[in-house]
Length: 140
Image (spheres, rainbow, N blue to C red):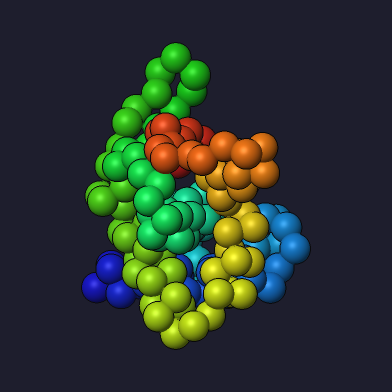
């Protein structure tokens, strides 16, 4: 049941990433529709990362299997595979790709620090092959 709830919220949040203009606006939109606060935080940080991994791994860029949370010097490492939001977002990105919706994927990628880093590296003439673990703040 929880996985279905996460999938529902991932789809709603992903559409907000496509149509909204800032994180505060997305957060308010999700909360106004009844999304629990702890889930809102996960949606905001994990969806763009999941879309980036789904998009760029197809180009041969290796993404980490883990991410970091917590304060500097006291990071905790977590597996993306243990995050239902992340996994649902990967499935959604794959589905949108199969459906031929690259503009929607591109809009979500606009929110991704990983995508931004990859594109900056490519613009500088580099060919990134692997990303390091990302710090996703203080999500519980």
